[in-house]
Image 1: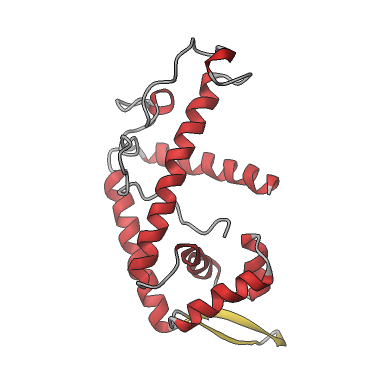
Image 2: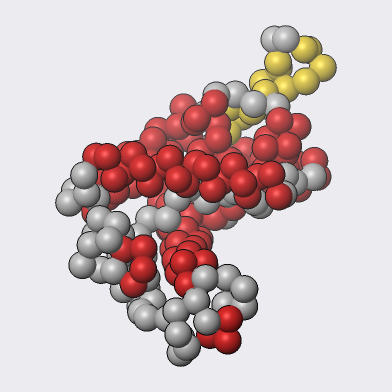
Length: 198
């Protein structure tokens, strides 16, 4: 599924250097050094350096996003297993959405994640089989049903999400609140651009 993961929990850092615990522009290189070291050969901004018409800042962004997305995928898998050993990583995003907005119709979830009804139906059936969600009649339309957490599913998910937020708090403890707010603002803006291209 499209936006199935929830953020990039950087405790799954793999072999890359962890730039997440340093404020932007700090000792880890911030916006210019990157988590994967210096740029490939060539002068800064040189089209022959592998960036074509794009400047070095775009190459830095590309590398950082690659690291971010790898860690996000790894994090989604780990958090899914913490909720339930048989929960698929892609389905974790469904639980995030239900926690954020409350009960949803299957069609609303399919639209949000940009998948077909059949794909969403399979995902929801798997979540139901694990006892994490249940479908109930939509009071606004008796022909439709709403997907919502079971009590046990909500308890499992809340425990995992609370632990993830605590990890974020520890890793970003050295950051200024204004820097965290700015990062969230820029990610929100970038996600808006990505959604427009989907």
